[in-house]
Image (cartoon, rainbow, N blue to C red):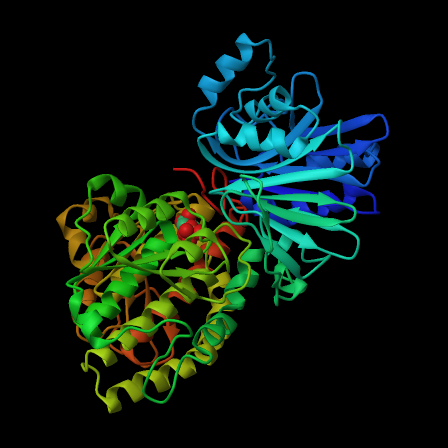
Length: 607
Ligand code: F6R
Protein backbone atom coordinates (compact mmCIF):
# COMPACT_ATOMS: atom_id res chain seq x y z
CA UNK A 1 0.00 0.00 0.00
CA UNK A 2 2.90 2.30 0.69
CA UNK A 3 6.32 2.65 -0.86
CA UNK A 4 9.55 2.66 1.10
CA UNK A 5 13.07 3.57 0.02
CA UNK A 6 16.47 3.78 1.67
CA UNK A 7 19.99 4.87 0.78
CA UNK A 8 23.44 4.53 2.27
CA UNK A 9 26.53 5.58 0.33
CA UNK A 10 28.70 8.57 -0.43
CA UNK A 11 26.14 10.78 -2.15
CA UNK A 12 23.55 13.16 -0.77
CA UNK A 13 20.71 10.87 0.33
CA UNK A 14 17.74 13.28 0.03
CA UNK A 15 17.59 13.62 -3.80
CA UNK A 16 18.10 9.87 -4.23
CA UNK A 17 15.29 9.13 -1.80
CA UNK A 18 12.97 11.59 -3.53
CA UNK A 19 13.68 10.10 -6.96
CA UNK A 20 13.10 6.60 -5.57
CA UNK A 21 9.79 7.69 -4.05
CA UNK A 22 8.67 9.13 -7.40
CA UNK A 23 9.09 5.68 -8.91
CA UNK A 24 6.96 4.22 -6.12
CA UNK A 25 4.22 6.82 -6.05
CA UNK A 26 1.89 4.28 -7.65
CA UNK A 27 1.97 2.38 -4.36
CA UNK A 28 0.40 5.25 -2.46
CA UNK A 29 0.28 8.99 -2.75
CA UNK A 30 -1.57 10.70 0.08
CA UNK A 31 1.55 11.87 1.92
CA UNK A 32 5.29 11.39 1.88
CA UNK A 33 8.40 11.96 3.93
CA UNK A 34 12.10 11.32 4.33
CA UNK A 35 14.55 11.03 7.24
CA UNK A 36 18.26 11.72 6.77
CA UNK A 37 21.16 11.23 9.18
CA UNK A 38 22.72 14.66 9.70
CA UNK A 39 25.69 15.52 11.90
CA UNK A 40 23.39 16.86 14.62
CA UNK A 41 20.85 14.08 14.48
CA UNK A 42 18.15 12.71 12.22
CA UNK A 43 16.38 15.34 10.09
CA UNK A 44 12.75 14.50 9.37
CA UNK A 45 10.75 16.15 6.58
CA UNK A 46 7.21 15.01 5.83
CA UNK A 47 4.09 16.42 4.29
CA UNK A 48 0.50 15.53 3.53
CA UNK A 49 -0.28 15.41 -0.19
CA UNK A 50 1.38 14.09 -3.27
CA UNK A 51 5.15 13.92 -3.54
CA UNK A 52 5.43 17.35 -5.11
CA UNK A 53 4.31 18.86 -1.77
CA UNK A 54 7.32 17.21 -0.14
CA UNK A 55 9.52 18.20 -3.07
CA UNK A 56 8.54 21.85 -2.63
CA UNK A 57 9.70 21.80 1.00
CA UNK A 58 12.94 20.05 0.09
CA UNK A 59 13.63 22.71 -2.56
CA UNK A 60 13.66 25.35 0.20
CA UNK A 61 15.77 23.32 2.60
CA UNK A 62 16.92 19.78 2.17
CA UNK A 63 18.59 17.72 4.91
CA UNK A 64 22.24 16.88 4.17
CA UNK A 65 23.65 13.43 4.84
CA UNK A 66 24.53 10.13 3.15
CA UNK A 67 22.16 7.81 4.97
CA UNK A 68 18.38 8.06 4.81
CA UNK A 69 14.99 6.45 4.41
CA UNK A 70 11.76 7.61 2.75
CA UNK A 71 8.11 6.74 2.39
CA UNK A 72 5.08 7.43 0.23
CA UNK A 73 1.81 6.61 1.97
CA UNK A 74 -1.66 5.27 1.20
CA UNK A 75 -3.61 5.69 4.41
CA UNK A 76 -4.90 2.68 6.33
CA UNK A 77 -4.73 3.62 10.02
CA UNK A 78 -5.25 7.33 10.46
CA UNK A 79 -6.35 9.81 7.83
CA UNK A 80 -3.92 11.35 5.35
CA UNK A 81 -2.21 14.11 7.37
CA UNK A 82 1.30 15.37 8.08
CA UNK A 83 1.47 13.82 11.60
CA UNK A 84 0.32 10.48 10.20
CA UNK A 85 2.90 10.59 7.40
CA UNK A 86 6.04 8.52 7.69
CA UNK A 87 8.81 8.40 8.82
CA UNK A 88 7.73 7.96 12.45
CA UNK A 89 10.03 8.34 15.39
CA UNK A 90 10.17 6.98 18.91
CA UNK A 91 9.02 9.36 21.66
CA UNK A 92 12.56 10.49 22.50
CA UNK A 93 13.46 10.77 18.79
CA UNK A 94 16.26 8.17 18.82
CA UNK A 95 14.75 5.71 16.32
CA UNK A 96 13.03 6.47 13.03
CA UNK A 97 10.98 4.03 10.98
CA UNK A 98 9.22 3.79 7.62
CA UNK A 99 6.69 0.99 7.27
CA UNK A 100 4.57 -0.64 4.60
CA UNK A 101 1.84 -3.00 5.83
CA UNK A 102 -0.52 -3.17 8.78
CA UNK A 103 0.22 -3.96 12.40
CA UNK A 104 -2.94 -5.72 13.49
CA UNK A 105 -2.21 -5.70 17.24
CA UNK A 106 -0.99 -2.10 17.36
CA UNK A 107 -3.70 -0.89 19.74
CA UNK A 108 -2.75 -3.40 22.39
CA UNK A 109 0.95 -2.57 21.95
CA UNK A 110 0.24 1.16 21.95
CA UNK A 111 -1.73 1.00 25.19
CA UNK A 112 1.04 -0.96 26.87
CA UNK A 113 3.73 1.43 25.62
CA UNK A 114 1.68 4.42 26.77
CA UNK A 115 1.51 2.93 30.27
CA UNK A 116 5.29 2.69 30.16
CA UNK A 117 5.55 6.40 29.37
CA UNK A 118 5.91 6.43 25.60
CA UNK A 119 4.15 9.31 23.91
CA UNK A 120 2.41 9.03 20.53
CA UNK A 121 2.00 11.78 17.96
CA UNK A 122 -0.01 10.01 15.27
CA UNK A 123 -3.03 7.77 14.78
CA UNK A 124 -0.98 5.21 12.87
CA UNK A 125 -0.25 1.60 13.64
CA UNK A 126 3.37 2.23 12.60
CA UNK A 127 4.34 4.44 15.51
CA UNK A 128 4.47 1.47 17.89
CA UNK A 129 7.47 0.12 15.96
CA UNK A 130 10.08 2.84 16.70
CA UNK A 131 8.86 2.90 20.30
CA UNK A 132 9.24 -0.86 20.69
CA UNK A 133 12.74 -0.62 19.20
CA UNK A 134 13.53 2.14 21.67
CA UNK A 135 12.21 0.00 24.52
CA UNK A 136 14.38 -2.97 23.56
CA UNK A 137 17.56 -1.10 22.60
CA UNK A 138 20.55 -2.12 24.66
CA UNK A 139 23.43 -1.20 22.41
CA UNK A 140 22.56 -3.34 19.37
CA UNK A 141 20.03 -2.05 16.86
CA UNK A 142 19.59 -5.38 15.04
CA UNK A 143 18.78 -7.06 18.34
CA UNK A 144 16.26 -4.35 19.26
CA UNK A 145 14.55 -4.62 15.86
CA UNK A 146 14.37 -8.40 16.21
CA UNK A 147 12.70 -8.13 19.61
CA UNK A 148 10.31 -5.49 18.34
CA UNK A 149 9.13 -7.38 15.24
CA UNK A 150 8.72 -10.50 17.33
CA UNK A 151 5.79 -8.74 19.01
CA UNK A 152 4.16 -7.54 15.79
CA UNK A 153 1.16 -9.27 14.29
CA UNK A 154 0.30 -8.39 10.72
CA UNK A 155 2.36 -7.38 7.73
CA UNK A 156 5.39 -5.17 7.51
CA UNK A 157 8.31 -4.09 5.45
CA UNK A 158 10.25 -1.63 7.57
CA UNK A 159 13.46 0.34 7.40
CA UNK A 160 15.00 1.76 10.56
CA UNK A 161 17.46 4.58 11.26
CA UNK A 162 18.90 5.24 14.67
CA UNK A 163 20.80 8.11 16.25
CA UNK A 164 22.73 5.54 18.23
CA UNK A 165 24.21 3.70 15.24
CA UNK A 166 24.30 6.37 12.59
CA UNK A 167 25.96 4.67 9.63
CA UNK A 168 23.50 1.84 9.31
CA UNK A 169 19.99 1.01 8.07
CA UNK A 170 18.18 -2.08 9.29
CA UNK A 171 15.36 -3.48 7.15
CA UNK A 172 13.04 -6.40 7.77
CA UNK A 173 9.98 -7.83 6.06
CA UNK A 174 6.99 -10.05 6.63
CA UNK A 175 4.14 -10.21 4.08
CA UNK A 176 5.09 -6.91 2.41
CA UNK A 177 7.62 -6.66 -0.39
CA UNK A 178 11.16 -5.39 0.11
CA UNK A 179 14.26 -5.44 -2.04
CA UNK A 180 17.83 -4.35 -1.44
CA UNK A 181 19.81 -2.77 -4.30
CA UNK A 182 23.51 -3.49 -4.41
CA UNK A 183 25.54 -0.69 -6.05
CA UNK A 184 29.23 0.27 -5.99
CA UNK A 185 29.88 1.40 -2.41
CA UNK A 186 26.23 2.37 -2.13
CA UNK A 187 23.18 0.37 -1.20
CA UNK A 188 19.47 0.94 -1.59
CA UNK A 189 16.15 -0.20 -0.19
CA UNK A 190 12.95 -0.27 -2.21
CA UNK A 191 9.47 -1.70 -2.01
CA UNK A 192 9.84 -2.49 -5.68
CA UNK A 193 12.48 -2.61 -8.39
CA UNK A 194 11.75 0.70 -10.23
CA UNK A 195 12.82 2.56 -7.05
CA UNK A 196 16.44 1.47 -7.46
CA UNK A 197 16.73 0.77 -11.16
CA UNK A 198 18.51 4.06 -11.95
CA UNK A 199 21.34 2.99 -9.67
CA UNK A 200 21.79 -0.77 -9.91
CA UNK A 201 20.45 -3.95 -11.45
CA UNK A 202 21.69 -6.24 -8.69
CA UNK A 203 19.24 -6.89 -5.92
CA UNK A 204 18.47 -9.12 -3.00
CA UNK A 205 14.78 -9.98 -2.81
CA UNK A 206 14.06 -10.36 0.88
CA UNK A 207 11.80 -13.21 1.88
CA UNK A 208 9.41 -13.17 4.82
CA UNK A 209 11.13 -12.94 8.20
CA UNK A 210 14.42 -11.84 6.71
CA UNK A 211 16.47 -8.86 7.77
CA UNK A 212 19.05 -6.82 5.91
CA UNK A 213 21.66 -4.62 7.54
CA UNK A 214 23.04 -1.95 5.21
CA UNK A 215 26.36 -0.34 6.08
CA UNK A 216 28.95 1.56 4.03
CA UNK A 217 31.08 -1.55 3.72
CA UNK A 218 28.23 -3.77 2.43
CA UNK A 219 24.93 -5.50 3.10
CA UNK A 220 24.45 -8.52 5.33
CA UNK A 221 21.25 -10.54 5.40
CA UNK A 222 19.90 -12.59 8.27
CA UNK A 223 16.89 -14.57 9.31
CA UNK A 224 14.87 -12.64 11.81
CA UNK A 225 16.28 -15.00 14.43
CA UNK A 226 19.79 -13.73 13.61
CA UNK A 227 21.27 -16.50 11.47
CA UNK A 228 23.37 -15.04 8.64
CA UNK A 229 22.14 -15.84 5.11
CA UNK A 230 23.98 -16.28 1.85
CA UNK A 231 21.36 -14.78 -0.46
CA UNK A 232 21.46 -15.08 -4.21
CA UNK A 233 21.81 -11.82 -6.16
CA UNK A 234 18.95 -11.31 -8.60
CA UNK A 235 19.89 -9.49 -11.78
CA UNK A 236 17.09 -7.27 -13.11
CA UNK A 237 16.88 -7.27 -16.89
CA UNK A 238 14.29 -4.47 -17.23
CA UNK A 239 15.40 -1.33 -19.05
CA UNK A 240 15.23 1.73 -16.79
CA UNK A 241 13.34 3.55 -19.54
CA UNK A 242 10.65 0.88 -19.33
CA UNK A 243 9.71 2.32 -16.00
CA UNK A 244 9.42 5.85 -17.32
CA UNK A 245 6.56 7.45 -19.25
CA UNK A 246 8.43 7.21 -22.53
CA UNK A 247 6.92 10.27 -24.13
CA UNK A 248 3.25 9.55 -23.43
CA UNK A 249 1.10 11.89 -21.37
CA UNK A 250 0.29 9.17 -18.90
CA UNK A 251 1.69 5.81 -17.90
CA UNK A 252 -1.70 4.31 -18.71
CA UNK A 253 -1.51 5.37 -22.36
CA UNK A 254 2.08 4.21 -22.58
CA UNK A 255 1.10 0.87 -21.12
CA UNK A 256 -1.83 0.50 -23.54
CA UNK A 257 0.65 1.04 -26.38
CA UNK A 258 3.06 -1.50 -24.91
CA UNK A 259 0.50 -4.29 -25.27
CA UNK A 260 1.80 -5.70 -28.57
CA UNK A 261 5.11 -6.17 -26.75
CA UNK A 262 3.36 -7.66 -23.74
CA UNK A 263 1.73 -10.39 -25.80
CA UNK A 264 4.98 -11.01 -27.64
CA UNK A 265 6.91 -11.41 -24.40
CA UNK A 266 4.19 -13.60 -23.03
CA UNK A 267 4.06 -16.05 -25.92
CA UNK A 268 7.79 -15.95 -26.73
CA UNK A 269 9.36 -19.35 -26.28
CA UNK A 270 6.04 -20.83 -25.18
CA UNK A 271 4.55 -21.80 -28.53
CA UNK A 272 5.56 -24.55 -30.89
CA UNK A 273 3.52 -25.16 -34.05
CA UNK A 274 0.91 -27.16 -32.23
CA UNK A 275 1.69 -26.94 -28.54
CA UNK A 276 2.25 -24.71 -25.57
CA UNK A 277 5.11 -25.21 -23.13
CA UNK A 278 6.01 -23.36 -19.97
CA UNK A 279 9.45 -23.16 -18.48
CA UNK A 280 9.51 -24.90 -15.13
CA UNK A 281 5.87 -25.99 -15.22
CA UNK A 282 4.46 -29.28 -16.44
CA UNK A 283 1.37 -31.33 -15.78
CA UNK A 284 0.56 -34.77 -17.13
CA UNK A 285 -2.78 -36.16 -18.21
CA UNK A 286 -3.19 -38.28 -15.10
CA UNK A 287 -2.77 -35.25 -12.87
CA UNK A 288 -5.04 -33.00 -14.92
CA UNK A 289 -7.74 -35.69 -15.02
CA UNK A 290 -7.60 -35.82 -11.23
CA UNK A 291 -8.83 -32.23 -11.00
CA UNK A 292 -12.60 -32.15 -11.01
CA UNK A 293 -12.68 -28.40 -10.64
CA UNK A 294 -10.50 -25.41 -11.28
CA UNK A 295 -10.78 -22.21 -9.28
CA UNK A 296 -9.39 -18.97 -10.63
CA UNK A 297 -8.96 -16.65 -7.66
CA UNK A 298 -8.04 -12.96 -7.90
CA UNK A 299 -9.17 -9.38 -7.27
CA UNK A 300 -10.30 -6.51 -9.51
CA UNK A 301 -8.88 -6.56 -13.00
CA UNK A 302 -7.06 -9.82 -12.29
CA UNK A 303 -10.47 -11.32 -11.37
CA UNK A 304 -11.89 -10.04 -14.66
CA UNK A 305 -9.02 -11.71 -16.49
CA UNK A 306 -10.16 -14.94 -14.85
CA UNK A 307 -13.56 -14.58 -16.54
CA UNK A 308 -11.79 -14.80 -19.90
CA UNK A 309 -9.64 -17.66 -18.55
CA UNK A 310 -12.76 -19.56 -17.46
CA UNK A 311 -14.33 -19.14 -20.86
CA UNK A 312 -11.21 -20.38 -22.68
CA UNK A 313 -10.42 -23.28 -20.34
CA UNK A 314 -14.00 -24.57 -20.27
CA UNK A 315 -14.33 -24.20 -24.03
CA UNK A 316 -11.10 -26.00 -24.91
CA UNK A 317 -10.28 -28.27 -21.99
CA UNK A 318 -13.81 -29.04 -20.73
CA UNK A 319 -12.99 -28.72 -17.02
CA UNK A 320 -15.46 -26.76 -14.88
CA UNK A 321 -13.93 -23.47 -13.77
CA UNK A 322 -15.22 -21.14 -11.08
CA UNK A 323 -13.83 -17.63 -10.90
CA UNK A 324 -13.74 -16.45 -7.30
CA UNK A 325 -13.17 -13.03 -5.76
CA UNK A 326 -10.22 -13.55 -3.44
CA UNK A 327 -11.62 -11.46 -0.57
CA UNK A 328 -14.73 -13.68 -0.44
CA UNK A 329 -13.03 -16.97 -1.18
CA UNK A 330 -11.15 -17.57 2.05
CA UNK A 331 -14.11 -16.73 4.29
CA UNK A 332 -16.59 -19.03 2.63
CA UNK A 333 -14.83 -22.25 3.60
CA UNK A 334 -14.27 -23.08 -0.08
CA UNK A 335 -14.64 -26.65 -1.24
CA UNK A 336 -11.02 -27.22 -2.13
CA UNK A 337 -8.94 -30.35 -1.73
CA UNK A 338 -6.20 -32.27 -3.50
CA UNK A 339 -8.57 -32.76 -6.44
CA UNK A 340 -8.84 -29.02 -7.02
CA UNK A 341 -6.50 -26.93 -9.10
CA UNK A 342 -6.28 -23.33 -7.97
CA UNK A 343 -5.03 -20.67 -10.36
CA UNK A 344 -4.30 -17.37 -8.66
CA UNK A 345 -3.81 -14.27 -10.75
CA UNK A 346 -2.05 -11.16 -9.51
CA UNK A 347 -0.06 -8.47 -11.28
CA UNK A 348 1.77 -7.35 -8.14
CA UNK A 349 1.90 -10.79 -6.56
CA UNK A 350 1.35 -9.02 -3.23
CA UNK A 351 -2.43 -8.51 -3.02
CA UNK A 352 -3.32 -9.50 0.54
CA UNK A 353 -6.64 -11.17 -0.26
CA UNK A 354 -5.16 -13.17 -3.13
CA UNK A 355 -2.22 -14.22 -1.00
CA UNK A 356 -4.60 -15.34 1.73
CA UNK A 357 -6.46 -17.44 -0.85
CA UNK A 358 -3.17 -19.07 -1.85
CA UNK A 359 -2.46 -20.00 1.75
CA UNK A 360 -6.02 -21.22 2.40
CA UNK A 361 -5.97 -23.40 -0.72
CA UNK A 362 -2.53 -24.74 0.02
CA UNK A 363 -3.57 -25.71 3.52
CA UNK A 364 -6.47 -27.65 1.99
CA UNK A 365 -4.12 -29.60 -0.27
CA UNK A 366 -4.73 -27.96 -3.65
CA UNK A 367 -2.03 -27.40 -6.25
CA UNK A 368 -1.54 -23.68 -6.87
CA UNK A 369 -0.50 -22.10 -10.15
CA UNK A 370 0.34 -18.41 -9.79
CA UNK A 371 0.03 -16.07 -12.74
CA UNK A 372 2.03 -12.97 -11.78
CA UNK A 373 3.88 -10.05 -13.24
CA UNK A 374 6.29 -9.12 -10.47
CA UNK A 375 9.11 -11.59 -10.40
CA UNK A 376 9.96 -12.89 -6.96
CA UNK A 377 6.75 -11.48 -5.45
CA UNK A 378 5.21 -13.27 -2.49
CA UNK A 379 2.41 -14.97 -4.46
CA UNK A 380 4.93 -16.04 -7.10
CA UNK A 381 7.08 -17.59 -4.42
CA UNK A 382 4.30 -19.23 -2.44
CA UNK A 383 2.53 -20.80 -5.41
CA UNK A 384 3.57 -24.32 -6.37
CA UNK A 385 4.30 -23.09 -9.88
CA UNK A 386 4.40 -19.62 -11.32
CA UNK A 387 3.82 -18.49 -14.87
CA UNK A 388 4.99 -14.92 -15.35
CA UNK A 389 3.19 -12.60 -17.72
CA UNK A 390 6.39 -10.64 -18.45
CA UNK A 391 4.56 -7.32 -18.86
CA UNK A 392 7.37 -5.29 -17.24
CA UNK A 393 6.57 -2.72 -14.55
CA UNK A 394 3.01 -1.46 -14.67
CA UNK A 395 2.92 1.99 -13.11
CA UNK A 396 -0.59 3.30 -13.87
CA UNK A 397 -2.94 2.23 -11.11
CA UNK A 398 -5.50 1.14 -13.70
CA UNK A 399 -4.21 -2.11 -15.11
CA UNK A 400 -4.08 -2.49 -18.89
CA UNK A 401 -1.03 -4.36 -20.14
CA UNK A 402 -1.00 -6.65 -17.12
CA UNK A 403 -4.64 -7.60 -17.88
CA UNK A 404 -3.67 -8.40 -21.47
CA UNK A 405 -0.74 -10.46 -20.15
CA UNK A 406 -3.01 -12.28 -17.71
CA UNK A 407 -5.56 -13.25 -20.34
CA UNK A 408 -2.78 -14.24 -22.73
CA UNK A 409 -1.33 -16.66 -20.17
CA UNK A 410 -4.80 -18.05 -19.44
CA UNK A 411 -5.40 -18.64 -23.15
CA UNK A 412 -2.06 -20.46 -23.26
CA UNK A 413 -3.05 -22.55 -20.25
CA UNK A 414 -6.38 -23.42 -21.90
CA UNK A 415 -4.56 -24.70 -24.99
CA UNK A 416 -2.02 -26.50 -22.80
CA UNK A 417 -4.73 -28.28 -20.79
CA UNK A 418 -6.75 -29.13 -23.90
CA UNK A 419 -3.69 -30.69 -25.54
CA UNK A 420 -2.87 -32.74 -22.44
CA UNK A 421 -6.43 -34.04 -22.41
CA UNK A 422 -6.32 -34.83 -26.10
CA UNK A 423 -9.26 -32.52 -26.76
CA UNK A 424 -7.54 -30.26 -29.25
CA UNK A 425 -6.49 -31.89 -32.49
CA UNK A 426 -3.25 -30.88 -34.20
CA UNK A 427 -4.94 -28.92 -36.99
CA UNK A 428 -7.19 -26.98 -34.59
CA UNK A 429 -4.30 -26.25 -32.28
CA UNK A 430 -2.11 -25.15 -35.19
CA UNK A 431 -4.86 -22.77 -36.25
CA UNK A 432 -5.23 -21.13 -32.83
CA UNK A 433 -1.47 -20.88 -32.34
CA UNK A 434 -0.97 -19.34 -35.74
CA UNK A 435 -3.68 -16.75 -34.91
CA UNK A 436 -1.97 -16.15 -31.57
CA UNK A 437 1.28 -15.25 -33.29
CA UNK A 438 -0.52 -12.52 -35.25
CA UNK A 439 -2.07 -10.91 -32.19
CA UNK A 440 0.81 -8.48 -31.39
CA UNK A 441 0.62 -6.96 -34.89
CA UNK A 442 -3.17 -6.93 -34.73
CA UNK A 443 -3.12 -4.99 -31.46
CA UNK A 444 -0.97 -2.39 -33.20
CA UNK A 445 -3.55 -2.27 -35.98
CA UNK A 446 -6.39 -1.77 -33.50
CA UNK A 447 -4.48 1.09 -31.87
CA UNK A 448 -3.66 2.74 -35.18
CA UNK A 449 -7.16 2.39 -36.64
CA UNK A 450 -9.21 3.41 -33.62
CA UNK A 451 -7.31 5.93 -31.53
CA UNK A 452 -7.97 9.05 -33.62
CA UNK A 453 -11.63 8.18 -34.07
CA UNK A 454 -12.16 7.52 -30.39
CA UNK A 455 -10.65 10.92 -29.56
CA UNK A 456 -12.89 12.56 -32.15
CA UNK A 457 -16.02 11.00 -30.66
CA UNK A 458 -15.25 11.55 -27.03
CA UNK A 459 -17.90 14.26 -26.53
CA UNK A 460 -20.57 11.60 -26.94
CA UNK A 461 -19.50 9.96 -23.69
CA UNK A 462 -17.49 12.33 -21.52
CA UNK A 463 -20.34 14.22 -19.85
CA UNK A 464 -22.56 11.19 -19.19
CA UNK A 465 -23.52 10.01 -15.73
CA UNK A 466 -24.05 6.37 -16.63
CA UNK A 467 -22.61 4.13 -19.31
CA UNK A 468 -23.67 0.53 -19.77
CA UNK A 469 -21.69 -2.28 -21.37
CA UNK A 470 -23.16 -5.45 -22.80
CA UNK A 471 -21.85 -8.66 -24.35
CA UNK A 472 -22.51 -12.37 -24.48
CA UNK A 473 -20.18 -15.27 -23.73
CA UNK A 474 -16.56 -14.23 -24.15
CA UNK A 475 -17.70 -10.71 -24.99
CA UNK A 476 -19.39 -10.54 -21.62
CA UNK A 477 -16.11 -11.31 -19.88
CA UNK A 478 -14.49 -8.48 -21.85
CA UNK A 479 -17.13 -5.90 -20.91
CA UNK A 480 -16.69 -6.65 -17.21
CA UNK A 481 -13.15 -5.33 -17.45
CA UNK A 482 -14.09 -2.50 -19.82
CA UNK A 483 -16.63 -1.11 -17.35
CA UNK A 484 -14.20 -1.34 -14.42
CA UNK A 485 -11.59 0.54 -16.46
CA UNK A 486 -14.03 3.34 -17.21
CA UNK A 487 -15.32 3.80 -13.69
CA UNK A 488 -11.96 3.73 -11.96
CA UNK A 489 -10.30 6.40 -14.09
CA UNK A 490 -13.21 8.61 -15.23
CA UNK A 491 -15.51 8.29 -12.16
CA UNK A 492 -18.47 7.74 -14.48
CA UNK A 493 -20.89 5.16 -13.18
CA UNK A 494 -20.48 2.16 -15.47
CA UNK A 495 -21.97 -1.30 -15.34
CA UNK A 496 -21.66 -4.34 -17.51
CA UNK A 497 -24.24 -7.01 -18.20
CA UNK A 498 -24.63 -10.18 -20.14
CA UNK A 499 -26.55 -8.62 -23.07
CA UNK A 500 -29.63 -10.78 -22.53
CA UNK A 501 -29.86 -9.67 -18.92
CA UNK A 502 -30.46 -5.99 -19.70
CA UNK A 503 -34.17 -6.52 -20.23
CA UNK A 504 -34.50 -8.13 -16.81
CA UNK A 505 -34.13 -4.80 -15.05
CA UNK A 506 -31.48 -2.37 -16.18
CA UNK A 507 -33.19 -1.55 -19.46
CA UNK A 508 -35.43 0.65 -17.29
CA UNK A 509 -32.47 3.04 -16.97
CA UNK A 510 -31.96 3.35 -20.70
CA UNK A 511 -33.54 6.53 -22.06
CA UNK A 512 -32.69 9.04 -24.73
CA UNK A 513 -28.95 9.56 -25.13
CA UNK A 514 -27.77 6.93 -22.62
CA UNK A 515 -24.63 5.31 -24.03
CA UNK A 516 -24.61 1.52 -24.29
CA UNK A 517 -21.40 -0.11 -25.47
CA UNK A 518 -21.77 -3.57 -26.95
CA UNK A 519 -19.03 -6.05 -27.75
CA UNK A 520 -20.17 -8.45 -30.46
CA UNK A 521 -17.32 -10.58 -31.78
CA UNK A 522 -18.73 -14.09 -31.37
CA UNK A 523 -20.66 -15.36 -34.37
CA UNK A 524 -22.68 -17.92 -32.41
CA UNK A 525 -24.37 -15.19 -30.36
CA UNK A 526 -24.01 -12.07 -32.51
CA UNK A 527 -27.65 -12.17 -33.69
CA UNK A 528 -28.83 -12.33 -30.10
CA UNK A 529 -26.62 -9.38 -29.18
CA UNK A 530 -27.98 -7.45 -32.16
CA UNK A 531 -31.51 -8.03 -30.86
CA UNK A 532 -30.45 -6.61 -27.52
CA UNK A 533 -28.96 -3.61 -29.31
CA UNK A 534 -32.36 -3.08 -30.99
CA UNK A 535 -33.98 -3.07 -27.55
CA UNK A 536 -31.63 -0.26 -26.54
CA UNK A 537 -32.25 1.69 -29.75
CA UNK A 538 -36.00 1.39 -29.24
CA UNK A 539 -35.47 3.37 -26.00
CA UNK A 540 -33.35 5.99 -27.82
CA UNK A 541 -30.08 4.82 -26.26
CA UNK A 542 -26.87 5.54 -28.16
CA UNK A 543 -25.07 2.35 -29.16
CA UNK A 544 -21.37 1.87 -29.77
CA UNK A 545 -20.28 -1.58 -30.88
CA UNK A 546 -16.93 -3.32 -31.01
CA UNK A 547 -17.13 -5.76 -33.88
CA UNK A 548 -14.89 -7.75 -36.18
CA UNK A 549 -14.11 -5.96 -39.42
CA UNK A 550 -16.35 -6.92 -42.28
CA UNK A 551 -19.39 -7.64 -40.09
CA UNK A 552 -22.46 -6.24 -41.84
CA UNK A 553 -26.08 -5.72 -40.91
CA UNK A 554 -25.42 -3.33 -38.04
CA UNK A 555 -27.87 -0.59 -38.98
CA UNK A 556 -28.79 0.14 -35.40
CA UNK A 557 -25.30 1.06 -34.36
CA UNK A 558 -24.33 4.70 -33.84
CA UNK A 559 -20.57 4.19 -33.53
CA UNK A 560 -18.45 1.24 -34.47
CA UNK A 561 -14.91 0.20 -33.47
CA UNK A 562 -13.43 -2.60 -35.53
CA UNK A 563 -10.93 -5.30 -34.66
CA UNK A 564 -9.20 -7.49 -37.24
CA UNK A 565 -10.49 -11.01 -37.83
CA UNK A 566 -8.84 -13.65 -35.63
CA UNK A 567 -9.68 -17.01 -34.15
CA UNK A 568 -12.83 -16.00 -32.25
CA UNK A 569 -11.58 -17.36 -28.96
CA UNK A 570 -8.71 -14.88 -29.04
CA UNK A 571 -10.94 -11.91 -29.89
CA UNK A 572 -11.00 -11.06 -26.18
CA UNK A 573 -7.48 -9.65 -26.44
CA UNK A 574 -8.27 -7.41 -29.41
CA UNK A 575 -11.73 -6.21 -28.35
CA UNK A 576 -10.33 -5.02 -25.00
CA UNK A 577 -7.99 -2.50 -26.62
CA UNK A 578 -10.46 0.07 -28.08
CA UNK A 579 -12.36 0.04 -24.80
CA UNK A 580 -9.18 0.80 -22.85
CA UNK A 581 -8.59 3.74 -25.19
CA UNK A 582 -12.18 4.87 -24.81
CA UNK A 583 -11.90 4.86 -21.01
CA UNK A 584 -8.57 6.66 -21.21
CA UNK A 585 -9.76 9.47 -23.50
CA UNK A 586 -12.99 9.95 -21.56
CA UNK A 587 -10.87 10.41 -18.43
CA UNK A 588 -8.58 12.85 -20.29
CA UNK A 589 -11.63 14.87 -21.37
CA UNK A 590 -12.87 14.93 -17.78
CA UNK A 591 -9.42 16.01 -16.59
CA UNK A 592 -9.13 13.13 -14.15
CA UNK A 593 -5.94 12.03 -12.39
CA UNK A 594 -5.53 9.12 -14.77
CA UNK A 595 -2.44 7.38 -13.45
CA UNK A 596 -3.45 7.83 -9.84
CA UNK A 597 -7.24 7.71 -9.52
CA UNK A 598 -8.70 8.97 -6.28
CA UNK A 599 -8.93 6.48 -3.41
CA UNK A 600 -7.05 3.73 -5.26
CA UNK A 601 -3.58 2.26 -4.95
CA UNK A 602 -1.65 -0.02 -7.24
CA UNK A 603 -0.78 -2.71 -4.80
CA UNK A 604 -3.38 -3.56 -2.18
CA UNK A 605 -1.50 -5.32 0.59
CA UNK A 606 -4.23 -5.01 3.20
CA UNK A 607 -7.49 -6.91 3.44
C1 F6R B 1 -7.73 -2.12 -11.62
C2 F6R B 1 -6.69 -2.82 -10.90
C3 F6R B 1 -7.04 -3.57 -9.67
C4 F6R B 1 -6.12 -4.78 -9.51
C5 F6R B 1 -6.39 -5.49 -8.18
C6 F6R B 1 -5.54 -6.73 -8.04
O1 F6R B 1 -7.26 -1.55 -12.80
O2 F6R B 1 -5.54 -2.78 -11.30
O3 F6R B 1 -8.38 -3.94 -9.68
O4 F6R B 1 -6.35 -5.66 -10.57
O5 F6R B 1 -6.11 -4.61 -7.14
O6 F6R B 1 -4.18 -6.43 -8.10
P1 F6R B 1 -3.11 -7.53 -8.43
O7 F6R B 1 -3.29 -7.97 -9.84
O8 F6R B 1 -1.80 -6.87 -8.20
O9 F6R B 1 -3.35 -8.67 -7.48
